[in-house]
Image (cartoon, rainbow, N blue to C red; front, side):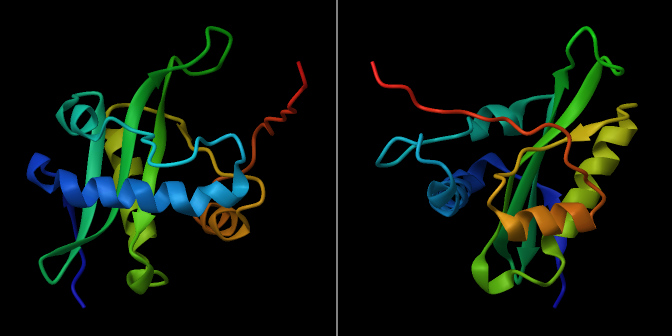
Length: 154
């Protein structure tokens, strides 16, 4: 099986929106703050068009089977690096998981950041999403800060 990693095209927006909904549905069990119904995390066309972002897709047999993006963000003034690459939109169709596609996309996004002299890459993952945490740890990511929350009654 040949896997090709390349930049996403605007013409692929419909499949990319399907992937986004796949991410939302996978994350719903971990986040009771998400609204019901169809929601969007990303402005995918804006990311595809941006010079400050790289949206990649994985292709198998001329079919888009995975995705991910990196975008350059400004760090807080007190942090070590001025900018960092934030990764998101990591998705692989269920029938293609476990074949190293996510790792290939991560590798290319990290290289994209390096080409821009970026020294730090960040991403967010739900605490209870153990499979994603394992995958990112295997790729070299380490926990940094745990965000905590609680709902209060009015």
